Structure formats: C-alpha cells, structure tokens
Length: 202
Image 1 (cartoon, rainbow, N blue to C red):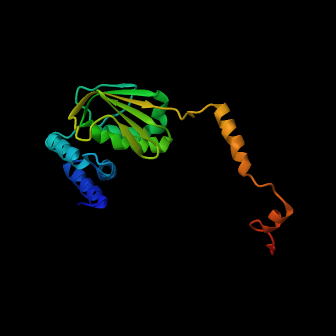
Image 2 (spheres, one colour):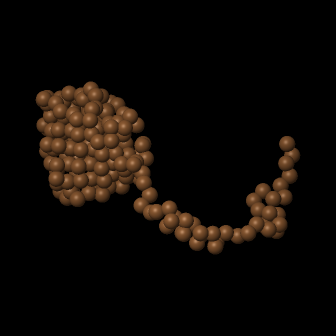
Image 3 (cartoon, rainbow, N blue to C red):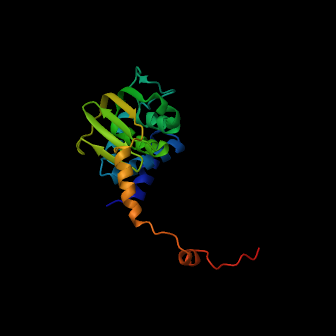
C-alpha cells in the first residue's frame, strides 16, 4: 500500500509533467491525498483526467460568477484553485453554479479546504448527488464511492451559515443544569489555586 506522502508527491510531480505550474501541482498533490484519505478514487480519477488533457491542456477560469458557463469544458483543478484562493469573497455569492466540469470529483478537496478556511459548511449538488463538506474535513454524501463521473452537466455550490440546531430555551435549560457542577469559591480554594503563593520578583 502506498503512503499518503507518496500519493501526494507522485500526484504533484505528474501534474507538473502534464503542464501545470509547480504551485498548482502542489495544490493537486494535497487534494489527491485528501481524496485517498477519504477512500475516494483520487489517483484513478486524476490519471483518467490527465489522459484526457495530455494533448490539449485546459484553459484557466479567469473569474468566478454566480453562473459559470464556457464554450470549453471546465477544468476541475483550475476551477478548484480559483475557488480556494477566493473563498472568503465567494461566500458572499451564497450559491454558485458551474456547467460542464470535467471529472468533478477532483474539485471536492478544494472545496473541503475552502470550507475549513471560511469555517462554514459547503453543500455541493452534483447532478443527482450531493456532498456536504464541513470545516473539520468531514464529508457526507449519497454518491457511491465507485461513482466516477467524467463530466458534470451542472454543479451547484452553496455556502451555508453556521446555525445552532437547538433553541435558546434548550440551551438555557442545559446551562442551568451544568451550573450544578460549579464549585463555590472559598478562601481555601483561593489559596490553593494555580499561582497562589508565588512571589513576584519583578
């Protein structure tokens, strides 16, 4: 079994060999490592994508709008890097749509890392499937791990606000219960607390 370090290094070098810059290649290596850590077919998908673009390197996506269409199929890597670099601004768009993205699985780890940066969940609707990406690098999905779509007709990214799932009343009730564990402060506690008895020589 290959180590995650080997997976990242080989993915990075292969990306440089296929025509990406070293900076982009390093981001690809990190992303493929993430996919493999989640038992998703990162190496397999990257290998297939590189075979497709070997003689026709994809164009970069200049700007990301609420709706993104192109005469050419969109590169999941250039698109993912653009999102990652601008995620703090893009979250203000709330919902972003992309059409005709090649090998869409490759964009997922960039969105995971974006979720971590903005500290908000990101929902991804991929044709008929869905991913929920959380800032602590967890993935929930109804898409089978063996699914490896070669192109997504429509991919929707939705930035979610952090919201409590409980009411103020429930929080107050639980907090009041937790107060039973508080220990009243006494003189003996003050004298034995951390820092007590230390002399300040400054």
